[in-house]
Length: 294
Image (tube, rainbow, N blue to C red):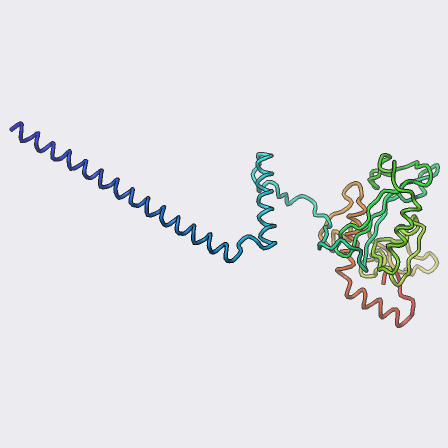
């Protein structure tokens, strides 16, 4: 009886062992099959990607570089990649193309510092010029022509060290005269910039966003003629206000950047360019005068 029981137990144990071996064989076969599929799939993709040149076009390369840069930044800071994109960060004017050459249309802005006993008289401290793509073609500080009594850093962004060793005024004036020659000049309140450069520019080649009527405002009560109460023309709006309203961009949040301001004026002009040029051409035909603002 005891030998019979032992025999049954042995048979059962042997059966369990066989089942385990069978299961292991199935698992091994599944793994081998999966590896084979992956290998074939991988080789197929490698061949296909080589054939179609996957990841080699400029857009794909740029995207890959952006991903790699984001990954590297994430590793450096220890922050998730998504935290680098801050939707609350102000959007500033940026270049719209890659052209870095001088173009027929340019935009300019200057920063000034104060001279004289009260520092209220302005002289040139920095001039920036961008081409029609918004790329910088000139951006330089300028050596003051007389002692500076107010650097106006809070607005101008200019500090004493910026002007030490800067190019002399006459050199920059000559360079600007060459740049302006025969080109359409865009800017905001350009009379102030041209005044500190001691330069003139033809009205027919001037597009001033402070004077273009659709970008101006009605005169305020204290700006109206006192004798008749009839408004004389229109009032100009700040470049910061125009940039926010028409472009959804922010400039002059603190110290001004003449590059940002030049780009902002350029983008405003380009947004209105078709109507602006049509109205300007019509005014030239009717009155022969035109105007800096159109």
